[in-house]
Length: 268
Image 1 (cartoon, helix red, strand yellow):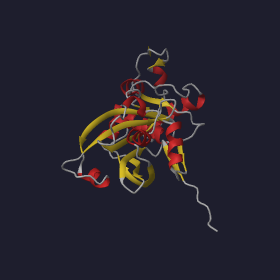
Image 2 (spheres, helix red, strand yellow; image 1 turned 180 degrees about the horizontal axis):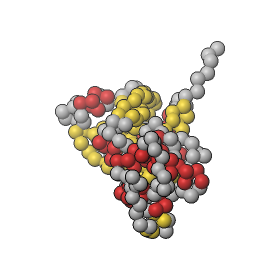
Image 3 (tube, one colour; image 1 turned 135 degrees about the vertical axis):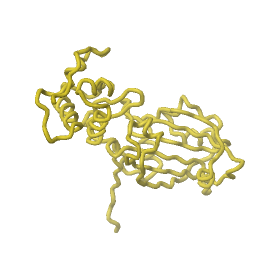
Image 4 (cartoon, rainbow, N blue to C red; image 1 turned 180 degrees about the vertical axis):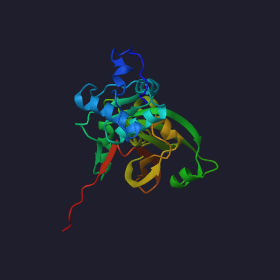
């Protein structure tokens, strides 16, 4: 049976919606519906009809235009996002990526200076800044007493300069070291640098761990992922001169939006 088609409509951006996203008269038999939807959208991206930065209509409008369920549309968008065609933005749905730019690359984080450069080339948009009791895991990492210690937790979206989101970050700082930490400067100044400036403590080293995980409810909400979808997790523990931990950070990245590169050299 031929999928239904919606009436043409025009969105606020002036781009046509509805029929422009409908199936051709003869849908492909034996091909999953979500792949047919993805192929239609990919064709429009490859042809330039949908240009980098263009925002796709909401899922409900795409579903109506294609005559499929929202679940099918969500699968299609995920398929394209995993292949670098689309990016997700909090509260703005899916936008077309500039594939010529490729993935967000974090090259050779071998020094604190590399972290500073990475922070300067991207933007951290705060989602929340709260003071709370230190949980058992965070207290152990920061060498705090779990029942009496408090930390300031900063949650934020790591974005490219054009606003495309490619990660979600959680940062924990002992409340004694977080005095003067300002939400309005988090997007432009690394948090550890603000801690150094405000407390007089110098960060001398960072322990970094990279692992794989699955998207929880928080990542589903902020990164537009499916529940348990694979993510790259990067944990960093910052140490002051003398070895005392002063900050713990966790960053989560969809594999389609982030690539970690390490260059190895032969020793002599």
